[in-house]
Image (cartoon, rainbow, N blue to C red):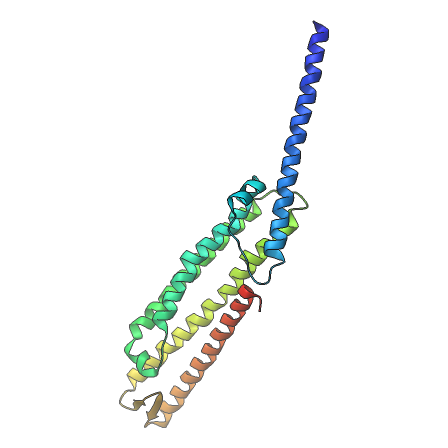
Length: 235
């Protein structure tokens, strides 16, 4: 009987070793597939690419598919909670002329107020992704590739996107100041198309200063938008 027990123990040891080896091989295969995906489909791609996983890819990555979900969840939140609402606010605050601005002060104010809420949402979503990223424990060959993919699709994109908020918000803010100023001095200011006729030189000087600020802030907003497009499309 003792010999039988020893034989059973030996068989069990071999079986466990085979099982562990099989699991290890599966994990290594899954990890390699995930690394190749991150490198070729995200890191090496021009611009920001966040492809949705197919059923086969999800299966081939095993547990690593959950790590990629940190990136895709952030982008889903960006699309639904940031990009779409921001487009709506930009459309609401789009001004074609000074007359348009004078008649749509409420729309400009709504766009201005809405941007503050979107910036808070952006910070919250980035913080959620950053915490999930920091909590990952990854093999040495995977971590640097994942970090590059994360920086490109989350950190760099979010930080570039954030530059739009102050530039856009300041543009709306100075537009509101122009509207208020013109309204306060309507006895001295006449609007003719896109031009102002001002009867008081002092008022003219103040108005010119405000309009220069509008132009400067509009330029900053355009530059921020161009930088974001370059980050997204890689051009």
